[in-house]
Image 1: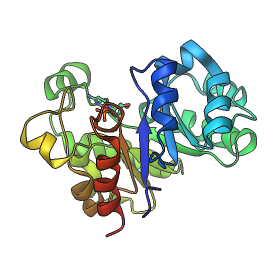
Image 2: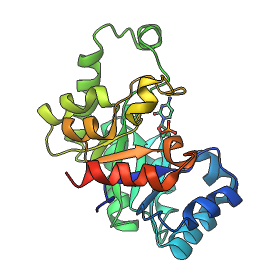
Image 3: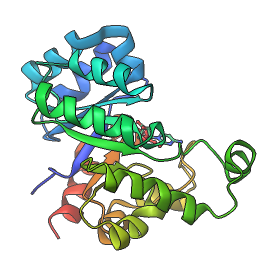
Image 4: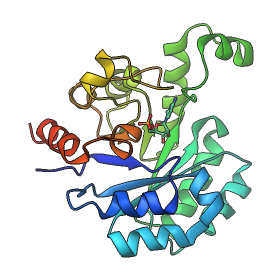
Length: 235
Ligand code: C5P
């Protein structure tokens, strides 16, 4: 049973809830995602604690986006932090991505740098108003193309864009949020996620890693959910 392709997002949880979730005897999920909410509040100490106490790999979801030198220095400040994945906005441009990658290889050499494309909270009308985008696939392809040319390790994308990335840029790792179990999709229990897929479908489309939050952290029976997930991952 391998759950190595699953990243569990610790959002909207207190420290006690995080402790309880990570101490669950069946919780062998190897990677946890710490986002802005927790990092702004608890900083590097929480990263060290989760890594040390629970032996988890850390996905630090900071979605960095600034001028190249600022992003470079921010990444330098992450030196010695035990992180395996870090996110950055592709729309910061190739120069920013290259500066980030260059610094990351020195300061956090084991960390994969992953590009965020468009936020899933943006709807088609927002993309049109903000950037004049009418052809969404073409706009995504442009961003993924910049991720490829700057040689970052991978991209974050919804289940809808997995095929596009894998077809045009097979080198890029694909990390996919928007995952819901089939019973949740059937009962439309998908909360604010707009573009969803089951773990099995996302993996079949070619996702390398799945990001799953509330379906696991708020699960009524975590052991059953983990068993279900493992059955897809080992197929
Ligand atoms: O919905 P779930 O709790 O599984 O969210 C997992 C991750 O998906 C979140 O940590 C966030 O990064 C991302 N997300 C997203 N779009 C949303 C909600 C969450 O991309 N509408």
